[in-house]
Amino acid sequence: MEFRALLIKYAEIGIKGKNRYLFEDKLVSQCARALKDLPVPFNVYKKTGRIYAVSPEPFDVEEAAEALQRVFGVAGICPLVQLPLMKPEELAGAAVDYMREMYPQASGSFKVFTTRADKSYPLESNEINCLLGEAILKAFPDLHVDVHQPQIRLHVEIRSEINLYSRVLPGPGGMPVGTNGKAMLLLSGGIDSPVAGWMVAKRGVTIEAVYFHAPPYTSERARQKVVDLAAEIARYAGPVRLHVVNFTAPQLHIYETCPHEELTIIMRRYMMRIAERLAAENGCLGLVTGESIGQVASQTVHSLAVTNEVCRLPVFRPLIAFDKQDIIDLSKKIGTYETSILPYEDCCTIFVAKHPVTKPNAGIIRRSEERLLPKMDELVEEAIRTAEVVVCG
Ligand code: ATP
Ligand code: MG
Image 1: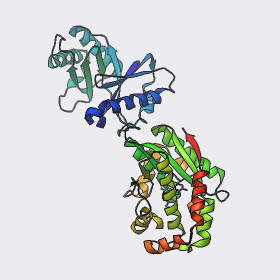
Image 2 (image 1 turned 90 degrees about the horizontal axis):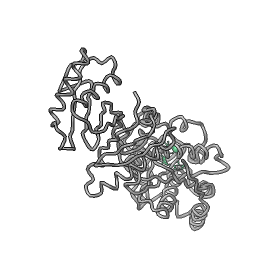
Image 3 (image 1 turned 90 degrees about the vertical axis):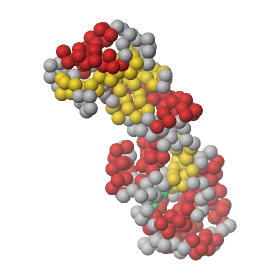
Image 4 (image 1 turned 180 degrees about the vertical axis):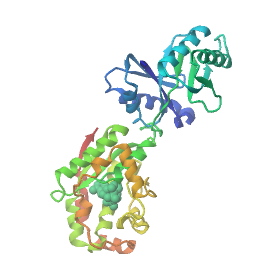
């Protein structure tokens, strides 16, 4: 069947009261962005609390739905037949034609759901349900009406035009990116942090990212992998500004000065400090990490507490209580897994002790860090000053 229009349904943004139009406008612009690369042009607009994507040419519904399935805030995507206002008898004929094309072998149960925004239409919603239901029953001997659990739900909307649809393809849910401030994602080349960024973006937050590398100990390919992951996130979240920080000098200084079992925790505290500085400079209101309780030594509750101590901004850890397998499943679903498992080195894994502390003591860690000063302050400033910004996606 040829479709030239989609009805885009949204869920949560419908409850935002006075600010609702802001959410709708963001959603409209992001749906338009997602559909822009398709072979046919789309006009995306809102009208009386609904969002429509309409094209002058027929299009591949599955392809358009796949693009919209990356737009947070979309709850459902309905391929739509739009008809001019017509008399009830003609509408009954059009409903039968629709059913013939959509379900040539239709059997099982159905129900007609009519809503009538145009109250001047000669029949009421229930009367339209009956009229169309009868016409469909007559045309399809193998169909019957089930008002409780119909297999086919034919929606008929009488507005300034008439909309017919019966398929609702699921959207990703969430809220439109750009409706909930900006956060700085600590993005490594691993499995977890891209998933964490995706989850926070899904709640409407614009994502900016920071990656710490340690050339020449980490390679150009490892850096490229993180750029690729940021681009994957951008497929959902829009372009991601990635700050690439050269962390070699601070890391070597820590390595040469501090007890080796404390390396990871001290390194992580400096990553958080630098990320927070970059966040503040770029208007981000929080940090995001892919940490999950107990996954590695630096993510015991004790370690997380000691790491968190250096931050003043809120740190969002959406994976905190996820099992690794659940994170892997999600990374496969969103498409970051294949890139994440490419075997390139990470700066954390290079300067790592055989037996890192799992229950660091904040006082001891602070004293170790004092020995890094004053040189460390200069190295941190230098790392921030020389950070390079790559726009991904
Ligand atoms: P991931 O799979 O996200 O790399 P991980 O299990 O390897 O996580 P860690 O190496 O302990 O865990 O890192 C915990 C979190 O710290 C990561 O999820 C990420 O948010 C951040 N992080 C770690 N390494 C880096 C890095 N090189 N650059 C930026 N952020 C990093
Ligand atoms: Mg990692």
